Length: 195
Image (cartoon, helix red, strand yellow):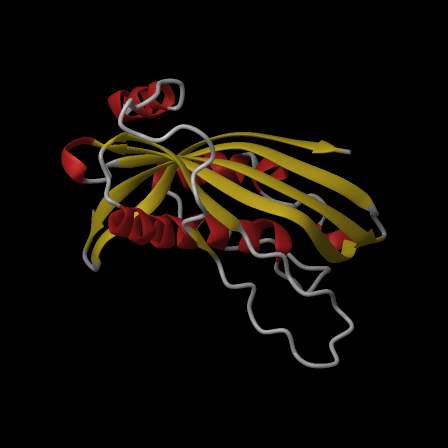
């Protein structure tokens, strides 16, 4: 894995002369889920998923499929670790989209990789920003790795009222399983701060 991680990190810094300059168009966004009529809760903020750069070549239809697949993993972690209620609650299952080794490290770092330190003392979370931009490694027209650069801004309410900002990177790779190939998070480099 060190080679893949190095390639992804280097890919985040180098350009592909075949790719257009400037911000790419939005590729996909997750569904915010149902908003029952008459609900007093604000509508959830969906994640904005963008492909920022491709190192190699990946046609537009393949990019859309990739973002759907990696987006499910990233959103699953953000939901379970930070935004899904009801609160107060215990944070469990947040790392199901991680490889076993990465999940052990993330659980040990749960105060960074989840709201586990606050989830038992809050009664709600309001998300103000949720965005992910991907750098994709795609030699020979096939995605073999991705770096997800993420931004999550939220406000907690209840016993602990706090503005929280989560920034950083997730490293993802396709992993063969009995059920087929699934994308998994194999590393993280995150910062979480009060704002």
